[in-house]
Length: 308
Image (cartoon, rainbow, N blue to C red; front, side, top):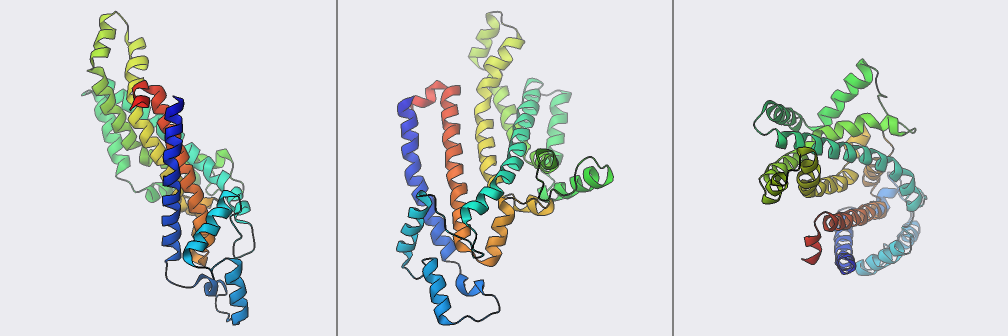
């Protein structure tokens, strides 16, 4: 198991440098001069422009800029925004809010995927199976931003069961409505994966052997069927976590949530390339860590994987 963990950590190193280089290259290849954009309609003199370029290392060759950026990132210094705030402080202020939102969405998605997938797989061809599939099909056909607006109108405005907007007070309770709404629009893939795995597992020899030994469904389903069916659902949930962290801009915009998506969107509008790169790099590192944790969980669920 130790060798497996070390191998996965070593594999993450080239992934980190490859993705950060690609992100840095793409962001700084965008047209326009971010330093001039910083001043808007004003026309600064050349000395001021040069000073700003030196402050953000924009006067250096591209590879030198990248190396300085990596050096700063690895030492915990991600620079400052155009408004003079530390990028670290801006991120640490916004990240907990987004993490709360994504945690609610991912946990709800996982519970819905496993619950409805297990129900459909165990009741294949019956009413519960058909009803679950139709319900999932309807939810899957609704674009997430439409579902968010509908939930906001009915649950927040008409019925008054949840705050209409979140604002600065981003508590767990205030984030429940957007989090669960997101989960309802994305749990369908996980549910179908769970359903297919359950159906396949029920036809496996080890399940038939378990029943032949006299074990009841209360023992066979959770230990032999559900456990062996979780791997594809965990994979899908991990992918959802990364996608949601990076894609919360619309949700945070509709519910006025002061999270990463909102800060990132504002930074793109202002042309703050250093802030954009730093935020995306942190999200990339988190995505890599989540994938490593998922791989380790695979090895726990199925010990054969660690020897591959």
